[in-house]
Length: 179
Image 1 (cartoon, rainbow, N blue to C red):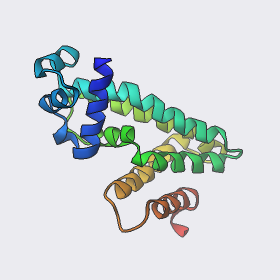
Image 2: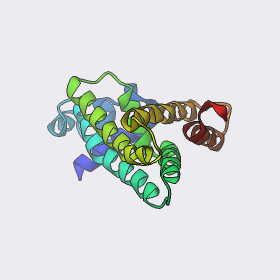
Image 3: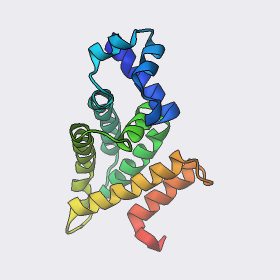
């Protein structure tokens, strides 16, 4: 239960204040534990990040996969992939993953984040192949780049509404720059 409480506190800190807010004193204060007790559960900030990725990323990916499974066409699967990821932007788990992926992490933590993102991207490769892409893996990576750019735009509170950003990202993914 303490580990879960620490992870929940870490999510809150990351979503409210970014990576700078994720400190062991802040975790201790949020959970009512002594700072030395936090070290009993996690040896470093990177360890907290790794645990958050291990716990939260599969849930996030399952939500994207569930949305894709409802689609009947490859194009529908691609649209669901984009829309569901962008719908999750306001979720604390997502904000935490975005915050931690931008932080200065050790090589192990960065590799775990990369692997988790790779699993997410792998979900869309088959649909892109079914749409006729000669290099569906590369197309999936580029598609994810559009999603990542839209996430950043939404997170930054751009002038456009999140729904407008989502619609533009879907249009870009499905029709390219032709609009």
